[in-house]
Amino acid sequence: MMIQIDQLTKLYDDHLAVDQLSFELSAGKICGLIGPNGAGKTTTMRCMAGLIPATRGELTVAGCHVSGDSLQLKQRLAYVPDDPPLFDDLTVGQHLEFIGRLYNVDDHRTKANGLLSQFDLLSKINAGATTLSRGMRQKLAICCAYLFDPQVLLLDEPLTGLDPPGIRSLLLSVRKRADAGATVVISSHLLAMIDDVVTHLLVMQRGRLQYFGAAADLRSQFPHAKTLEEAYFAATSNESGLPESAALDQVLEIKNMASDLTEPTLDHLALPRSESLGEASL
Ligand SMILES: Nc1ncnc2c1ncn2[C@@H]1O[C@H](COP(=O)(O)OP(=O)(O)OP(=O)(O)O)[C@@H](O)[C@H]1O
Image (cartoon, helix red, strand yellow):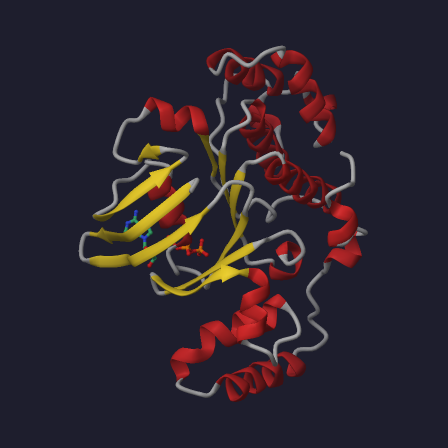
């Protein structure tokens, strides 16, 4: 297993942010981490990355026991937060130069240029980090993470600031990395966007696990749901005590009332669907 989380519990003072969360992922899996605001998604990722200590629980990531300062874990894992911290004094190119040297990446300049081109950032290679837009900062952080080919990638809300070609590049690259053996956890509220790329889903609500398993199984557990979004609503509505179909009907009713507020889908991005996605070149 590439990720083994056993009974992860995180308290901020007396606030229970994550409550006895357990799940496992093997190499090559892409897990969508979804749940309402405040569900505990970022907290879970930060604990997995060893950035904050778990209050309780056993966490093993990329063969490393997550406990405080583990150099090996840092070499094998990349965590990209939704508002990535960059070095104000460095240019885009210098960020990649720094990471390339730090991680001893072979031929890091060629690789860095390839990544910058993939994420449409090559023209900004000499731009200072402070002059980048929010989406460009996000893309640079993703390039830095990809440069050293980590075994585990934790991407916290990576789609939020990206333009449609950026989203397309990111999702294709996630699929390609997973095909090459990386394990990816990707948190997002844009369910329609990640629907086609995830192999697994972890649904959290108020710190607790609502569902973990293969994405296809979530749909079979909620057979009335036609999309991942509907299955998600059904999974997170069951605290209401309603039977699944009634909870879903209630959700669909609310959604129909707001039917003009349609969410963008992969079709809007002209992203190839599952069969062709794996073969698409970047
Ligand atoms: N540093 C902190 N100190 C105290 N409470 C915190 C801290 N960070 C998060 N929390 C609380 O822990 C809970 C989980 O927060 P977290 O950021 O993990 O949620 P999330 O699922 O990532 O939310 P979102 O979708 O809004 O990003 C929330 O109630 C939040 O207020």
